[in-house]
Length: 243
Length: 164
Image (cartoon, rainbow over all chains, first blue to last red; front, side, top):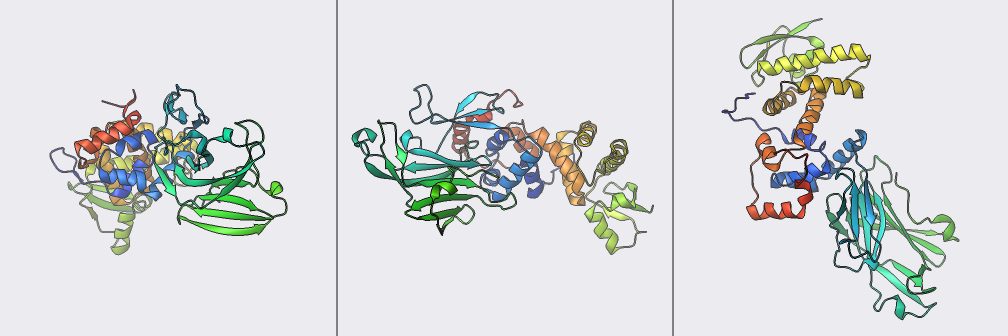
């Protein structure tokens, strides 16, 4: 193997390049998507790469903790984005994040769960005239129109197919107060660390039944599991703990 | 301990202890195919690289004795740090690149892992151009395409830690 500058160096095989890349921090990786189209494709789309990177970073305790700030449904004017990041890697400066639906009303966006740096966002249908126009005690329905899996660190996201999950709501008091009646509960995570797949679980209560919808990210499809449950409140918590 | 003889591309001969030689999957395959008394030819390996590889294994033995840890079986933090510090000296980026290629060719897993770690440390704060040069990657973006990425992710291109 020659190392004179005049002579042509043999290129490193791709698996070695990947071995090096998956040890790099996210900031460097994003920058290096500019190196070439092949590197960009490896860094962004290669599933194996994403996994190796996360596992190595976690094992080496280099995984920096970032805080995702959800600025609430009516953020103050000074905040230009619904979501912001507080990150050790960026010297704790607060950074506005690029997120999937910047033009949508913030009220309609729900954070449905997160795991390993991925966040699931749901976009609900808009209330046509807002809550103010509904009489107190009136029942109405909201449902999800779109779902997305989003990586706040890189800004990349992927829309996933969205079945019709209805949430029954009742307006209890003034404009800002609302409550779910027939519940929809959801969670996102990995079933086990060794399972190379993420699942989004949405549970609907319909009368005496629970309908459990499970989405597999790897298979990109939904499965339905029916179960009967007499008292949904005993079983369901708002979000599932990640493993 | 039986010694295995190898000859590098520039004609130099080295005698390796058998257990060291067997760490290389490539040499091991040759040994299985031929007699152990024959000299193994390594036309893709330069003598300075072989010196470095022998240095690595000598260091491993030294540090194993000092820390009482089996390096091959368990990756000990202090051990790795001590090793990295030693190995990092006198090795330019280009030489490290060459050594990576050779160690991959020889199939020495444990050394490859360490060198990848070293290379990652050296690469992480590089600019895009510097990275392209080091890895010999062809620039295939149009100026417009590259400018778009730089604008969308400007935060990744800024920072005091990024080398000129």
